Length: 160
Image 1 (cartoon, rainbow, N blue to C red):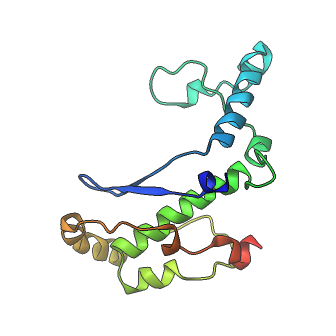
Image 2 (cartoon, helix red, strand yellow):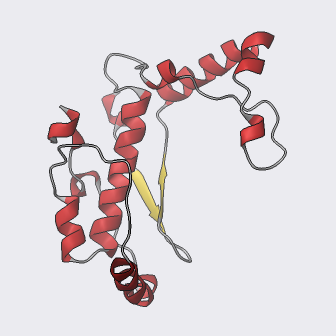
């Protein structure tokens, strides 16, 4: 049973930027569906959480997920929805850095994060360096990475 909860990412880079596909484990789907059903059953709550006007396109009745839902665990054996999503992001970033980065990027992928930062400024020199790597990156066949290729964020000081 625990096997179905392992984080698995599939890399796609058919024409440009790398994207990664993750399959959401069924307990998280149930958590979100139950939450959505509860919101839809209440006209007041449905109107309060209607996020449609903030989205692109002609979207109707798309609800914002309340903060407490992100912290819920579908069961005692799984991390919260927020932590599961964070693990997906972590796997993507490390895969991307290892696959398309230079030596410095690979060192960044192995670092121990101790604090949270909110802003990033890319210098023109860094942007130029990235643009110079673009032709080679787009011509390179992506490596297939596994779960063992990325760091465990729970071991980093910031997440302890």
